Image 1 (cartoon, protein in one colour):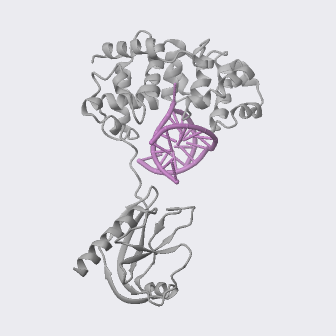
Image 2 (cartoon, chains in turn orange, blue, green):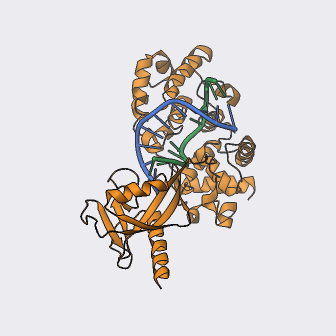
Image 3 (tube, chains in turn brown, green, cyan):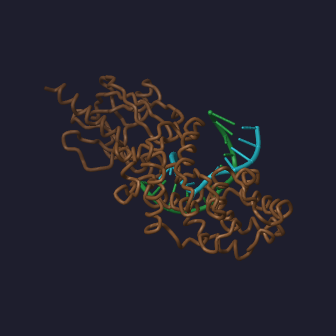
Length: 354
DNA sequence: AACTCGGGGGC
DNA sequence: GCCCCAGAGTT
């Protein structure tokens, strides 16, 4: 789509389906738009709704904000987080009052010089409250454009950010910029969402490269993951003469809470201690192929051992321990890699007996 | 380029 | 429990 077709489609959608009732869309002034934009930095609309009107009622003008005690401003901000925003808000209010006569400068560059106002927020204030043709690139627009252009690379990289900004500038129309800016944010917030985007309702689906590829979720490319911490553990599968493996129930809280799992050892020599604790006699041991299991916060390398034991002198009733019969498996919760290992053990034991 | 600031919601 | 959210400032 040409930039004209792009912005027209977005504006038409906005007129029919955009949000027009948000508090900061009423009685639009640079002051109200500015305060809303600062509140909305890294903060969802539903959260800001609980703060905006209260803030405006207490401090209705930039002069009131400039003159307020800092404690009052922070009080009005309590619970919103990122409290530097509140302090910068008042710093900027004082500058606007003392240096600009109470009127925000109609100039993106001068706006970005004010504390707490970066390029995107400056663009939003300039376009929405002043009608200046200024692009924005907040999280919503970033997502919409990254998908529309199937933008490769993590947007945090300067090169990628530069391309996204260039596209943001390219598609920003000369007319109705105020509505266009709001429209792009609405589009990103309501249709072009991070997960489960409503592409069928999207005015840009015709030209959207990500949609064309069926890869909407792939964009924007997420921040590169830091390498996960590595841990290792030994998991012995103690198999008795009846083809059953010893499991224990993990504490109800924490990792694999309440699930049944295999014992864990740091080194194979600890097998003797483990056997002693359960009154077992070791017969043979056999290393199985290792496997890795990835958690959200670390990666676990598992070294499984199939260990045949004699349990004839074992105490059968230990709380939170049981013999899991591989031929007639009971129905209980197993950690994923444990389930996998039990299947392997069953295969080996059956193959070994036949 | 990486880190910090923060509370809340989605999955 | 992560990731992400109408980001910006600091190191």
